[in-house]
Image (cartoon, rainbow, N blue to C red; front, top):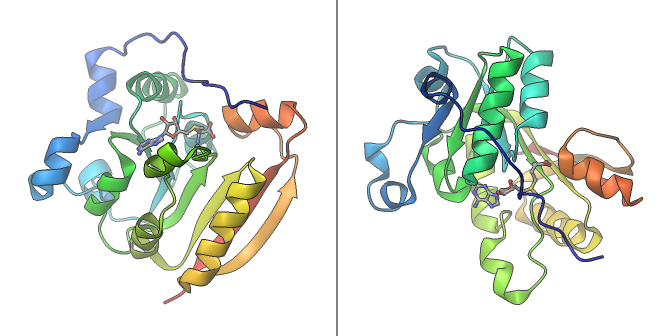
Length: 220
Ligand SMILES: C[S@@+](CC[C@H](N)C(=O)[O-])C[C@H]1O[C@@H](n2cnc3c(N)ncnc32)[C@H](O)[C@@H]1O
């Protein structure tokens, strides 16, 4: 089945106070040439607390992020997303839910991860990253060895990286990358119809394509 673009949708631009509350922009130029001029992506900087973060890499429209933030009000959630309309939609969703334990980093997550301090996160989620199906798309692959090393670096000891995709070959490729890296121990693996955690999950499971999930515990 051809992969569809699900990022064409209407969204209302959030009011300035909602943007200021939830969205932090990390422009590519600064991230590339002068990253130290941008604030660290830490619980202290984003929430004014000392606590582990939960990161959602490529959070899309923030459904999973906001739902988790509502379910776990004592935890601190940070979504990374570069598509402006998705970031706006996620901010509107957070505002509507009335949660204050969510922030959205509008950035290329592969660069923005470099601004997350070592051992800042208890969990990192990467849910339904776009599989680079054509050779020219490989540069857009979100789960490269470099990104995997960053994920390992930002996790606390015993922290968990959660990877989910609908795509069997992509799953096999990334499972091999993770196992061969020696950075993680595979703590859980499943293939199931989990139902509705994210928009993309609902979409693919609607076509009887199961979610393939890996939970990877950080090794020292
Ligand atoms: C297939 S969607 C999945 C969204 C969400 N995780 C879900 O399951 O509904 C992938 C998301 O990753 C975002 N994305 C892709 N590459 C990115 C990058 N380099 N930096 C930040 N976001 C990226 C896309 O804009 C898109 O919203």
